[in-house]
Length: 215
Image (cartoon, rainbow, N blue to C red; front, side, top):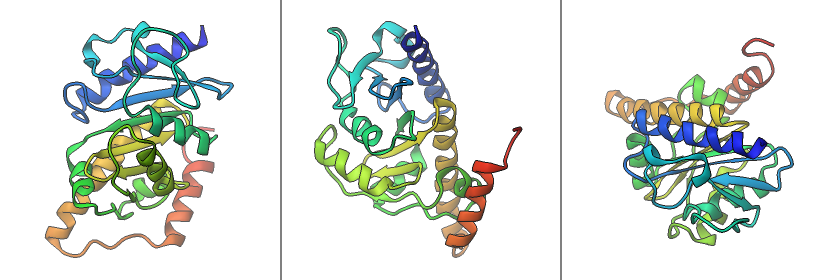
């Protein structure tokens, strides 16, 4: 029953990333994991988000192997599996091809932490993972290394991966990274963008995690 609820939420957030222009057609992918951490569900390969039903969402183990017959999981399942193995704190992952973040990925330029909301939600600059073909174990390894303890990473010549404590947070991070990428690109036209210092980022991140919002 719990997995069914997660699958329903994955379908809902698939519609949201399309509506926000973070992906086009069938690109990108979304996953979330269960409370015992040993299973996650992920969008199927090559299916239109508008056509997805909860039964289309694929159950896989932490090695990325499907647990049931049916739909093929996303080609980027190895990336999701590797992140879940490396980061027990992460419960949801959204991979998008948003325009400005993808421009940085194409240029292989990290997005510096020039905005406070990015410091709060990402926890530092969005670094670029070394290039490797989509769906490869090499890309999965590179993504985990570049992600570190932050909440977003760029895949060189590809797009952006956002991670969070739930799908709502991962989705918000997708939006913040895209906005930050746009601001970074425009600020380079206006002048020289000034990144926040490590100390400033740490203070903002700690405040977001421990004091921000209704508690």
